[in-house]
Amino acid sequence: MLSLLILFLNQVYSSDLNLHQRLTDFQQASSLEASLPNHPHQLLHELASSSLDMCEQLEKLSDKELILLDPYIEEFQLLPCFPSLMMKIEKYHTLQNTNILAESMIVEMGLDQLGITSQLSTIEPVGEMQPPFFSGYSFVNTDKGEVVYRKNLITGEYPNMSLEQGEIVFTFDDGPSPRITPLILDILANHQIKAVFFQIGNKSLKHKEWTQEVVKQGHILASHSYSHRSDLYKIPFEKAREDIDQGHKEVFYNSGSEDAAFFRYPYGGRTQKLAQHLYDSKISSFFWNMDSRDWAIKDPVKLYNHCVEQINRNQKGVILFHDIHTQTANIMDLFLKNLKQAGYKIRLAVPLKWKEQYEKAI
Image (cartoon, rainbow, N blue to C red):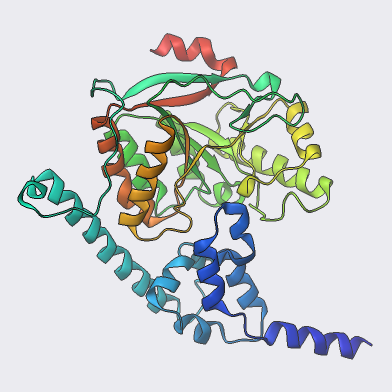
C-alpha cells in the first residue's frame, strides 16, 4: 500500500506544472484571492517539491513570465541558475523603468503639444494644488476593533475612515524588503508624506533594521501575519490565530515601538472566528478600496495607468501597494508628483488612542 502511495505522489509531483498557462491565469486574475491557485510564490514551491529540474523549467520561461517570479525567487538563491535568472530580471526592470521615464518626459517637456503622445494616463484634478501635500491624520478606533473598508463581521457596521474627496491613505504590504523598502521610504520622505506598512513577521525577523526604520521615519507600523499563508482563512482556527498573533508580536518586538493594533489579512481572506479574535484583541483590520495590482502588473507604464484609473474612479480612500516590487518603486515618485498636481492630499491612518499625541505634533 505504501509503495502505491509513493508511486502516486511521484506521478503527481513529476507531472508538468503547466507554468506558462498558470502564470497567464495569474496575471489575468481579477483579485488577490482569485490569483492564489496560480500565485508565483505557490508555483515556485510546487516546482521545488516536484521531481522536475527547477533550473531547466525556469530557464524555459520568457522574460515576461520570469519577471512574475520576482521577488519570490529570492528564496531560492542556492539554485545554480539563480545569478543568471536575476540578471534577466534586473535587465527587464531597467528597460521598463527607462520606458516610463521617457513617457513622463514627453509630458514634462511639453512634447505632447507637438503631437508626440505619451502613453501615460492623466489624473483628473479634484482641486487646485495647495501645500502641504500631507494633510494630517484619520483616526481608527482600535478599542472597538473597527474594520476599514469592509463590513465588520462582529458588529455589522461598515465604518470607513473619515476621508474627504481627494484624500488618500497609502498602505504597503509584505515587507520589509532590504531591496525595495529603502527605495519606497526615500520617495515618501522626498514628498514629505507618511504611510502604513503592513509587515510580515518572519520577514521582520530577518530584516529588523527596516522594521525599525519605518517607525523612525514616522510611518505607522502594522502586522500582516507571521508567514503570509495564502490559506490562512482555510486552516484550523487555532493555527491561523497563532500565525496572526505570532506575526503581530514579532513585528512590534523587532520595532521596539508601541503596538498600533492594525492588522491586514493576507490576501484579504478572513472568517467569522478570526474576525472575532481580532475584535476581542482590540485590533483593527485594514482593507482597501483601491488595489494597485502591483502584484500582477510588472510593466510600470501599465501599472501607473491602472493606479490612475483607480484614483479617477474612487477619488478618495485606501490604496494598496507592496514594498517588495521593483515596478512599484519605479512608478511611485511620478505617481505622487502627479497626485499632488491634481490637487490630492495624503493622510495617515492612526489609532484613535494616539490622537492626543499626534494632534500635539501638528
